[in-house]
View (tube, rainbow, N blue to C red):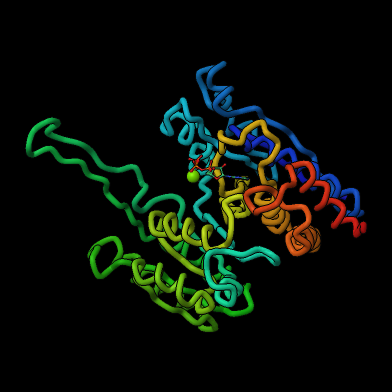
Length: 357
Ligand code: ATP
Ligand code: MG
């Protein structure tokens, strides 16, 4: 039996609380599955580490986690520190350092939960959004000039490369192919952005020729927001740029019920370096230390990690336990309208895993 080596980075605020709950659930799962084992190594990086050392992570941090099979991450962000330090110093340093160019966010309204859409529409939501995670509008290229003058300019240059588009398009096509509906929606804005977005369309079009079994739908990003609200059942797998998918994923998270549930994978599909799995919520300092953070997002994150590790059966078993708990509705945290704390939700999921009660 091989043991999966997991680098655990709780980070800031409730990040550590929900990740520790996740480790507990994964250990309970491993105790039930004869061929499943984990070797967790914890790293206390984040804003408190920064206050002590002047760095968000160890200087050789990437080297320390490079040989992990996966990174299980909480959240990063501190009300007293700028994002330039916190976000860029830890989360983005890992995403970029390990070239995790595919950001994947599944969205589904879990049984028993309600989102803002009419119930019959809400139940149609079963999406996975693939976000280009390494270039595009967030390439960090641009500049400022003529400061303070009437002619002052600030520019952010969206950088699209053939290689960058091709690899994310191929990843999205492979993912869409693995899902029952074989339906890919490509999001664009090439009617208004006449260079990078046109290249995006051209290269995606070339890649999808290799996937004749896929139904491919093209949507302008503005129209896509309406589609997600009005016809959620017409969408399955979505491919979008860094900025577009950033916005669409937040809309998806809202339509999927609660911030406390959603999860995301940052993947290096080459598998040369570890991929990173995290709940979508931030460090939520308003509820930190109260023991009431919803850990379900971190559990769903663990499912994504298990799938990536090739542990499909275990991932399915954990997802089923999460859904048992949401469907019963007896152990839900306050953000979902319940009164259970983090530990009680965790215990309820472990009981469901074991098939107790
Ligand atoms: P960041 O900039 O780090 O993303 P944010 O302010 O955008 O932070 P969050 O920290 O995710 O957002 O929190 C937004 C709101 O949602 C807060 O009121 C927080 O308490 C609530 N929230 C977020 N995650 C959870 C959770 N897991 N359980 C319960 N409430 C949560
Ligand atoms: Mg946020």
